[in-house]
Amino acid sequence: MSRPADPVHRDQDQALALTLAALLLTGTSLLVSCWIGPVATFTATAVLVVTAYAAPGLVHRLVIPRAVRRLVRDLPGG
Image 1 (cartoon, helix red, strand yellow):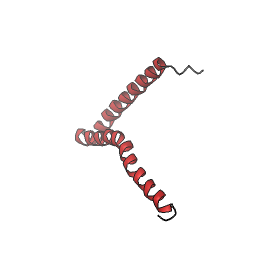
Image 2 (cartoon, rainbow, N blue to C red):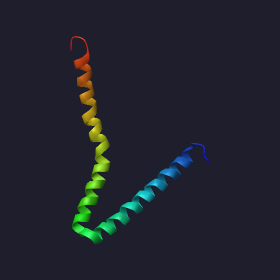
Image 3 (tube, rainbow, N blue to C red):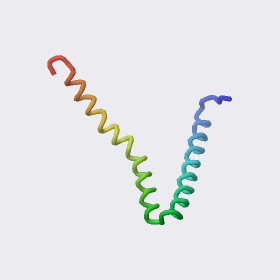
Image 4 (cartoon, rainbow, N blue to C red):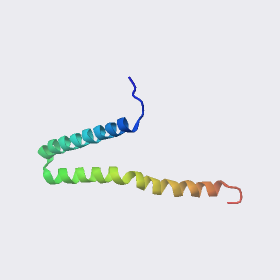
């Protein structure tokens, strides 16, 4: 069953996704903390969160200049 794509439903879906992500991250962190210790768990969780936050910008910074260089190189007389 599909719902219309209005802003209210989109906001509710995003809130639900964020809540589920926070619950999964918290639960996983607690389980891993029991297995390998709190310092290693904090480090692994922090690396995961920072990577998820920074990866799109980093990919954007790396891919676009490479594509531009390739385009310029492939142009006639380039």
